[in-house]
Image (cartoon, one colour):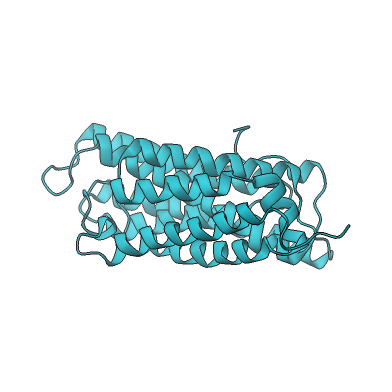
Length: 265
């Protein structure tokens, strides 16, 4: 029997509802009177406020995801494989953007990492719709939440850049954090023959935003610039891999290319 749009209807409706909860929470934090993205604690790794506009793209893509679940191609992955993890992710995200507490971000990152692993490991894209509405949003989301975990760690434990100068240890930890982000972008780029372009873009985007915003310390400013340049190299590597695959007319990936991009989480 052919799949019906009514199959898994409870989960489909839940996904739609939590999507708007997820979107609404981020709209409130940006447009509200005390926007955490613009008026939060200033650290020495805080990016320019425009870095958080990446949420707009993620939300637009995830809107496509919740629509695509009503089609047979989307149901196989979104309903049958991701299942109730998507509502869990949306709820956790709504919590952390409103509470802005470090451990909520880490929990949210764990949820998206699990979804990311399922999508990349077991569900290679069979069409361009799979690429755009399943693989693209969760790759971008995974890269971005990696950035958020780093930002939250500095917000929780780092000094306030408004009141304190950057000491030696602050510079060391910022340098290590920037190195970690750039290294993560490289991991995305080399994890498969073609790399994971969206996730690398999310990392590079954040590094350029940090470079643009961190001007009080020359060491941090130019360190972020160097790592942003390196991350851009990994973006270009991913773009070349994507172009090469497109020229070959291949959408489905081999077993090796389905391997998780970051660890085995």
